[in-house]
Every structure is written in structure tokens, then in C-alpha cells.
Length: 512
Picture 1: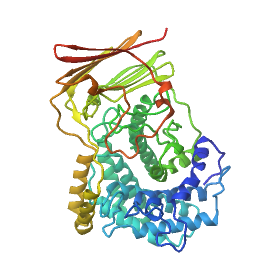
Picture 2 (picture 1 turned 90 degrees about the horizontal axis):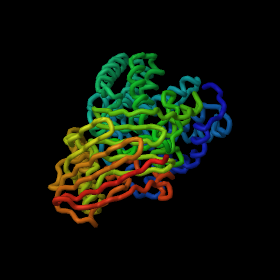
Picture 3 (picture 1 turned 30 degrees about the vertical axis):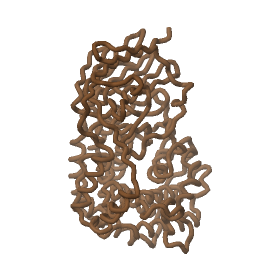
Picture 4 (picture 1 turned 60 degrees about the vertical axis):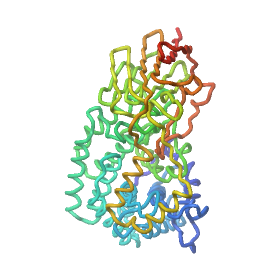
């Protein structure tokens, strides 16, 4: 790989390598030597080593083969030992059907299998490109062929970023193993995937767009293009990039509570060369292992670019998202999430994830919400949804793990369990007897948010103006400085009852 000058992408990544290595079991005589799941091998609180942690082996391999300022890991023999240990351990945790487990035993995880295969495929490619005779190559190829066999028998329709990883993984294995059947299959899978792109530029993540996961999809498609030279993904990447750039906030977060999965990061790539507010240092240990290599890959190719917020009023009718940007303020709201919004004025921010009333919320993504938009006004109406936040208890954990141990190997049961858990942990259905109406009005002088609550509620039970997310999205809820109180906007507040309807009106006056 070419020698490059250091830049901020590489600096941010290098600063976190000790944390990555702290996740790795570096004890040669340990049975779990090579595991990156510290909770499994060190704390011993997990009963499996979560497979996706092993994606960090690609991060170490990039460092091993990349010469740049400050990279003490370049061609280091100890790093090479750890890479080999991680590859061997990965082979030990693969299931007989080719799948890997991320969260629980016998999970048969599509995403873990796709993303691990992509990471291992890229790892092996680096060794070949550097003419390095890796003695573990036969083991890796066996892992990869088993993994893509599992992927080819599995369909993912709910969380589409995972499919982009599968496309890259299968394409890599086709190249590495000289298998035309896999190349043909990956091209067909890609064609189907590209056909699922919304005309606004996004792929569905539990029913709507999400910026963090869309940026991940862009990175996988970009790698596919670099590997194959295909022009098929050029226009889809362009559309996705435009959508991502529209929702980079003034504080350099991206997306947030007005998107389907509430993520606020941008995973960098050459197509999206941005250093957002959520940097590697903000990530938890889990996602640091999953995605740190993206900062290294991007830094090896380009320097960070400044984001430019385009002025104008835009309404994305497919996702029901309003965006208004001008010299006075930046406003984004999602009608399908009950008008959940974020507002920036004069360096301060106001977050609103919907109304919360006695364990119910208006800010849950709901296709059945009535949404109406006219220039200067967005209206959303619907019913409150019950907040789901199921926690794992011992009484649930024991029978669940016993079930998985006994019956989890059966593939059709794996899918049944996963669909059930998604419904319980992430998806929402049904409503309550309490309904709401939110109207957001905006002009050059003020932004007014008026909520009407229809049903029997008490004033003390209503919570609003909070940044909150209750669905189980692992890569959300990272902390950013703008959330602290001194950086929060304070609106003029009016509350009253009119004809058994409770009304909350917030007015944000704009600075002259």
C-alpha cells in the first residue's frame, strides 16, 4: 500500500488502537487467544465471544501493511502474531452451517456473517496484494466459503445495510476462490439491492432512512466499485451521498432522533470524507472493533473535508422529513415520527423526540401517521405508542439460552426467533386511546411548535423537549457536547386546556 502523510482520519484512528488492543486476548496459552470480546475472555460475563468483534482483525491488518507517520504497528512482528491469533480464533467460533453469532448462542446472524466475511476477505486480499504467504490462508478460505454459503440461503429485507455488506463479502470470496458462481450471485444480489433504493437516496432501516447506517452502506458500495470497477453503483452512491449531506447538522452530528434508528455518526469513506462530531473516541468498545478500519481506509486515500450546509427549504415526501436551512436557523422534522425535530439557532440546539406521556410516546416511527406539508408548515397526527424497553432478566435469560442451546441450530427457528426479538426490541405496533396533533410553523421571524393532546392526561405526566430513543439500536446514544444544558435553546412556553384538549405551544424567536 502506498506511503501517505498523516491526517486527522489517521490520527483519530491511531489514538484508539490501544483501546482496540485492550479488547484483544493477547495471552498465547489462553483457550480464547485471539478473541476481541473482552466481556467474554476477561470479565467472563458473556457465554459467547461475539463474532463481530473479530472485524478488528482487519483494522490491525491495515495498520500492519500501511506506512504512515506515527504508525508504530507497521510491519511489527507482534502485530502479525495477534492478527494470526485473531484469524484462528474466528475459525473456532463459526457455526457448522457457516454462520456466526453476535448476541446469543446459535443466533445464525446474517449481519455478523456478512460483515465478518467482508472483513476477513479484505484481510486476505491485503496479504495477497503485499505478496505475503499467510499460512492461515487455507483456514480463512474455508471460513469464507462456509459463510457465503449461509448468506446465499438467507434473505434480509428489514435492515438493508446488511445486504450491502453481503454483496461485498460474496464478491470478495468469488475473487479469492475463483468461483464464477459466487460472482454471478453477488451481481444478482447487488441488482436487487440497488432496486430497493428509495428515490430520495436511502435504503430502508426498519421502515425509514437512517444516516449512520446509510453512510455504512455507501462505504460498502464504494469498496465494491473499487474491487470490481463496476459503474452500476456510481449513481446510487451519488444519490445516497446527497441525502446524507442534507442531514449533516451544524454541530457536525448527522441525523439523530428524527431518523429511523437515531444514529448521529457518519462512517467516513472517500465518497463521504467527513470527520463528524461522533469520532472513534466517542464510540463504545463494541463499535470501535466493528468500524474503526473505516477511518484508516479513508485516511489512507484522502484528507477530511469541511461540511457545507446548503440553504433552502426541502420536503422529502417519501420519508416525510422537512429540512429548512438559512442564515438564521437549521430545522429538521420528521412527520412520520410525530414531528420529532431538531432546531439550531445561534450556536444553540433544541432537541425534541416527541411527547412522552405515562410510558407512551408520539415520536415512534409510524407509517400510518397523517402528515401534511405546505411551505412554512408541517403537520403530523396520530396516536401515542407504548415505549418498549425490555430488559434481560435472569428468569428470561435462563429459558431463552436453554432453548437456543437445544433448538437454536435449526435454521428456520433461528429466523423465527430473530423476527420475534426484532418485534419485541425494535419494532412498534398498535397505539393508545390518546392521540396527538403537532403543527410546526416557521418563518424568518420565529419557529412555532404547537402540540394538541386528545385524551385524559395530567400536565405533570407530559414530558417534552427531550432527546430520547428507546429502541434497541446498538450504535446510537453516543454522547456529544451540544447536549449539555448551556447549549440548549429555551423557547417561550404556553400551556393551556381548550375543550378537553391540552395544548402546548413553544415559540422560538430568531435573533435579528
